[in-house]
Every structure is written in C-alpha cells, then in structure tokens.
Length: 97
Image 1 (tube, rainbow, N blue to C red):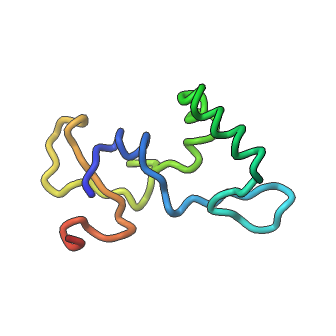
Image 2: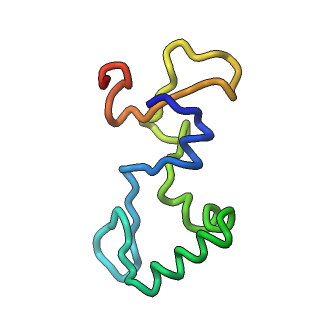
C-alpha cells in the first residue's frame, strides 16, 4: 500500500519492532502487562493522544524514511508532501496485487 510518510509514521505499526524490558532476557514484539496496565494505557491513549504518541506510541510505529526497509514510489513527485512510499518488507505493492 502506497502511503505518505506522515501517514505511515502516525498510523502504521512496524512488524519489526522489538522491545526489551530490563528484568527479562528476551525481547517482546508487544508487552502484555496485564489487565490493569492495559486499562490505564487505554485511558491514557483516549484522554492524552498526542502525549501517548510522544511517550509510548512512537516505539511501535513505522519510522518512515528513517527505516532501512522504507522504499519510495518509483515515479514520486518532487514535492515532499505528495511523495508516497511503502514498507519494503513485503515487497513492492505492484507485485502484491
């Protein structure tokens, strides 16, 4: 799917994200902190969405052009707000569909 970089960074999740908690010896793709922490996070996300993105949400988000798998559209326009790209992890969008 071709998306603008801004849309990818704000709305798309990265499948390559790995988080490591200090007491654990392995990395998680998502942290299951239990029902109480999930409810607290849900309320945090509802009432303070921008703060949630800055403090927590950006760890799981697509990094756009900052990621080595990000690829730009072949015939992309010069204007940065009109350029679209995709995650190269799954191949080009043209071969998928």
